[in-house]
Amino acid sequence: MAPTPRTLVTGCGAICAAGRTPDEIWDAVADGRSAISEIQQWDTSGWPTRIAAEVPNVKPAELLKDRKLPKLIRRTDIFGLYAAARAIDSSGLIGHRNGLEADAAAHFNDRSAVYVGTGGGTYDSQYDYLPLLAVAEGKLETFGRELESTVNPMWLLRALPNNVLCHIGIRFGLKGANACITNHCVGGALAVGEAVAALRAGEADRAVVVGHDALIEPQHILYYQRAGLLATDSIRPFDANRSGSVFGEGAGALVLETDATAAARGATVLGECLGSGATTDAMGLLAIRADGDGLARAIAAALEDAGIAAKDVGMIVAHGNGTTQSDASEAAAIRQIFAANPPPVTALKWAFGHLFAASGVVETLVALWALRERSVPGIATLLELDPDCADIQIASRTQVPRSDIALVLSRGFAGTNVALLLRATATGN
Image (cartoon, one colour):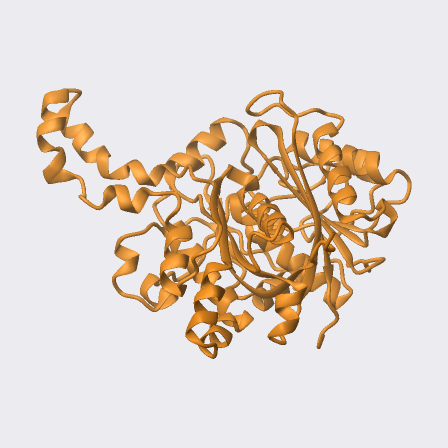
């Protein structure tokens, strides 16, 4: 039986309020700079929540180097395609393919997969209908008669949740295995896990993995605030006075390859995906277990998948969304797995907001940078550590990872939990 191939990271790209490259995002996190500020996309005067982490000065045509495509897709898709293009460019995949003979290039395309995670639930896709609904005053006949002349005929194409998946394949000619995972906050992390499984199973030789989301729009802000999930000043993960989360927007992308294909083309290796685990608490849409059982089981599954012990983990990037129950149960899960010997723990959403489906991929990239720099960034907004979290090595100061392996945690609605394990490669390898 052939050994299971290793899954290596050979390209990366990202965009969020903290920066438009992994280096820029890392610098912001390492320097303790938060990109959370007042919302600029609409007038929030009188709103109960007025802050978010917006990507500034978004010029779609410049980001995508395409004037027509931005008219057919949404803001979240623009971020996803931008990050994917940057990851593919940095990997050197296309230059390598272009140097192959025709048959080899065709085989390359057939063996190149794409996996995309998105929240898939933004309300802005429905905004084209709101003016007509107001004019129709509840009269279905009026609504139906005016629909064609009022709503953009390209509405359906703009609203498709798999636009990023499709356009990556179209633009770069990648024809292999593919999937679009629409699972809110864990979509990106699940896409990473699915891609790794596909490469291990021999379904592909390489994969482009993307997580993207753009949540900053009126209905999202209003509904989440009314549900008691949003803070009014900042995200303060694991702080005794934490009051909720703050939305961000953006995307992260990775190029993953088997060790054999990466070696064959002399690819630069940034890191390795070691394993993953996914579980659910199965309690309800918002309910999660106080003891962190679901997340603990996800961590245990990831450790088993990677074939390593808890003591081998060098640092943890916690989900750390700043809500009271989620942070407390996450601390309980870490305590359950690592007992009295946890590695340094950090959380990153204070710097660029909660990116939902993009969180898992962007935070994986920051974890790789942290390992390469031998620096676990502190939580800059942590003022008073919750006493219930004091034993799990969380701090506002910089810490040092105890190994070259990071655990990245993502959590979502309906008690979904994903754990990813990765190893960094020393600079220059």
